[in-house]
Length: 417
Ligand code: HEM
Image 1 (cartoon, rainbow, N blue to C red):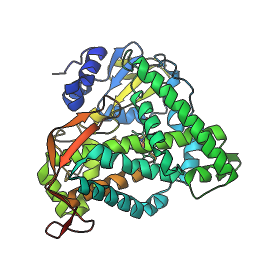
Image 2 (cartoon, rainbow, N blue to C red):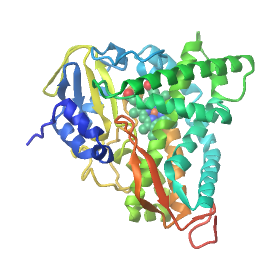
Image 3 (cartoon, rainbow, N blue to C red):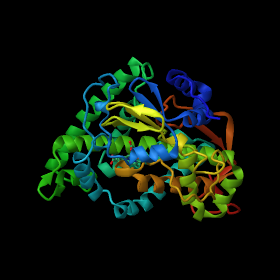
Image 4 (cartoon, helix red, strand yellow):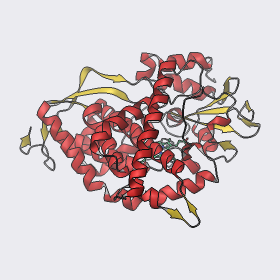
């Protein structure tokens, strides 16, 4: 029997209420089973793996969200980042950034990511408990992406504040979903980002350093050059996409492992499981739950009529739990081997440019938690979630433990802290 989704408003209210935020998957299962469907005039919902995957790869589906007839309200000064562009601009800008953001460059960051993770866990050892979001999941990716770009340490808190405000407003265009206060804060944050990076870019033009902003300023692609507005938009995109998402991956991962202690023990015993663990966390509890495309032409998705200008909301978190693709999809299993890749990093031309960095950071963070925290346990009432639907993760995750082992030591050896 085909499940019926409620009205778009009912589905969203259920996802947004406290229980829905803690466990959105029963509602998402229902929405996926009913999809694709027209939820509101101008808005189509898709949630199966096959449909999401096809839409993400379809050149007839635009990433230029402003083409949507159901456009969100004006949100203050905008930058044209390439996540929201179609070819040929998307292709040109993505290629230029890929040149300075290669797997080889990411590999060189590994020792620094390890050291930073070790320092953060050692600091937690002194306190005797750990709020995983504030003590590890936020500072690790924030520090790394700020250092990559060349944002000095004393300004990281500014970037974190602006980025969080922008992310809160990054929701599907359902009327009433984003409050006026949230939109105003996001507009203010965007203006702050723009002024800050304009100054940083100007500084690096005058005196280049060994950072990505300097490289972007210098980069030339045959006859083309990035112009200042491209660099500005790219910096804000990289900062925002480069840590808000990874925070959720690390926190969702620690939570899933604490709720499955036998698998945490497996990861501790077999560090080689780190890569598979991270990919299972991405599938099981996707940090980016929702993305969207805008139809360029009239078309059909399953039984749903899609008109040019309709926004197609893609439920990546639901697609990753599609039973047609993943047997027993609600089971967390770090030994799962699926021939079909999850969609947590999207697919097609906009496949996440930072997937390699995100995977590396999360592998190091989850491995360190497994190896160094002795008897970690979730504190009763120690989890709460951010209100966002699109970016899913806890805002608080408190873990108690008996001890924190020194980096490089295994359980049974002398502990520190
Ligand atoms: C767990 C961590 C991450 C997740 C789940 C994630 C997810 C995604 C998704 C779903 C998209 C595509 C959205 C769409 O197709 O509409 C995307 C694009 C992108 N991501 Fe990530 N991301 C993560 C980490 C990062 C990091 C660390 C960086 C940078 C350092 C990054 C940079 C980007 C960029 C630049 C794009 C735009 C690519 C394009 O439009 O061609 N992401 N990411």
